[in-house]
Image (cartoon, rainbow, N blue to C red):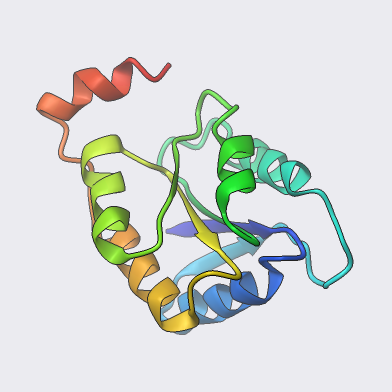
Length: 141
């Protein structure tokens, strides 16, 4: 499994923590930046992640910005991306099970690292259930 990661300046610190956390659990990552606190535009990083995930059906991504809101909106502009902004693990798990989310969005300023880790674990451990959810998800595109 490869997880693509990207963040703006407001999410960089949490993105870096999540990257280390994933790698310590033997999960390969591709870090698309940013890597500092200098102000950058979150849509650019959502676009980079979407481009990297294009034509990779099973790939997953994690995006982080200050609130998580802007980067999730930017990511969802791409037809092949189903990004879910979550702040706790139940929503994270359900985003995969019911909505077949392929990108997890987190807030770099509103949740701590322990909660972020729990959200990441729930997201990566869950699988799309299909069934009654499949027809609904198909309507996304």
